[in-house]
Each structure stands twice: as C-alpha cells, then as structure tokens.
Image (cartoon, rainbow, N blue to C red; front, top):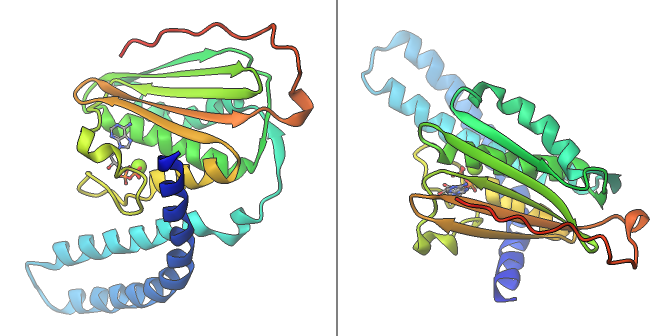
Length: 240
Ligand code: ADP
Ligand code: MG
C-alpha cells in the first residue's frame, strides 16, 4: 500500500542518517558537556540547568538513533518465539505503573511462535507499551490481545490514553516526530522498521480523547504453519 511504501522509504534513510551522523555528533556533545561541567563548578550562572537539560535531550536523541541502527541487532539471527511470552516479560518492566494502569491480558494461542529477530522485536514491543503508558495521563487501562489468525499472529495493544490527532496519524513513525516535550520521536520509527524488516505489519487506530490501538501482525514460524484453517480464534470486540 501507499503507507507501506512511504514507511519503507523513510526507514531506508533512518539507517543511513543514523550511522553517518550519530557517531560524529555524540562524541563532541559528550565532550562539551564534560567541559561545561567544569565551568559550572567555577562560575555561577542562572541558565546552567537549561543548558544541561537541553544537552541531555540532544544526547538522548542521538543515543536512540544509535540504538535503532545498532549493527549487532541488525545482524541478529532469526529465532522462533512466542510474542506474548516476550510481552509478559516486558510487562514486568512496567510494574511501577500498575498503581495507575491496569494491564489486561488476553492470550489466545499462547504457544504459537513467530520467527524473527527476537531482541529487535522485544525492543519494539517495549516501545509500544511505553507509548501506551505515556498516553495515559492519570489512570486507565492497557489491554493486550494475542491471537492466531490463519498463518499470522496478531497482537493488539489498546490504551485508554489521550489518542492521536488525525493530522498526526500520518506523521507518527517519522523519525524525530514527537508531541512530547521530552520525546525523541524514535520509538515508533524503530517499531515500523523492525516489523517491516521481519515480514510483519503495523496498523494504528486512534480516537482523540479516547485511546489508541496498535495492531501488529507477524507470520507464524514455518514450523507452526498448517494448511488446516479450521481452528481460527474467534474475533473479540475491543471497546475503547
Ligand atoms: P516519543 O514517544 O519519544 O514521542 P514515538 O516515536 O514513540 O516517540 O512516538 C511518536 C509520537 O506518536 C508520540 O509523541 C505521540 O504523539 C504519538 N503516539 C505514539 N503512541 C501513542 C499512543 N499510544 N497514544 C497516543 N499517542 C501516541
Ligand atoms: Mg515513544
């Protein structure tokens, strides 16, 4: 589709920019920060806090760019694993949010495995859950469903958060596009790139003020495919 072609062309440039620029920029930024810290010890200046927070923001952005293009991850081997088992582990990293966010898990066909680059995909799942939690300003729920549909595994992540404005839908996933004051805009760029590179897809549906659903699909590992389409998991309605 149009969206796919557009995403893929953006992604090709993410890697190039990342490797070319990130290393060149990170090191001098880090040196400047070190030198400024020395200056700060000697001189009183009311804007030090702003200088350091802006600098840290720039360094974090560069760092996230390097994480997306990490060569060790690009050359990762393919393995067979269950998406919802990984998700289960990732959710434990968000336990500190459980006082305000209810995590609802609906695991169908838990043992069905996909084939892909596990660490990359784990990072993508982490980015999606992080966004879902950040979208919920006070309290709410993040619902997760995992099901097999023919030879695909479908995972939906639905939050009751702020939602995405219609004008922004086409911009999410563009590197550096963020609506958060301290966002990097690299999370979804990583998600789209990893899912497409692993033969999967990403869809988003959102209602401003109500919430957002991200749907990711990955082909089932060849070890688990079957020509028998008799056992399709029934669709479940998701109410935002
Ligand atoms: P960041 O989280 O650093 O802003 P991302 O690439 O992860 O960067 O997300 C880009 C933007 O997409 C966010 O700033 C936000 O506007 C929007 N977004 C992503 N996920 C959600 C979500 N679950 N609910 C609402 N907005 C979202
Ligand atoms: Mg994010």
